[in-house]
Length: 85
Image 1: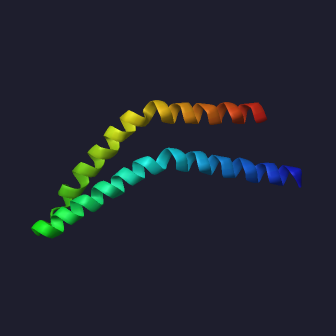
Image 2 (image 1 turned 90 degrees about the vertical axis):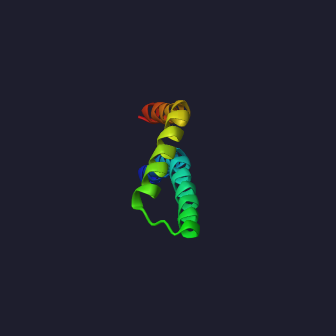
């Protein structure tokens, strides 16, 4: 029973770390996509590259800015996992 509980806690912690690192990037992509879709609706421009390019640029810029934080978060989680084993 103890092994099962610790395994579930490990899986839960892993998923929370993944969400903590991924949500800001996904959120920026979603907000930029929503804004571009709103502009497309107002101007009646329906070009697919108009949504893709700003989203990818926004996510890349945010990923570069958040890289130190993401690395620190993942390193702390990794050292916790090594201490458990």
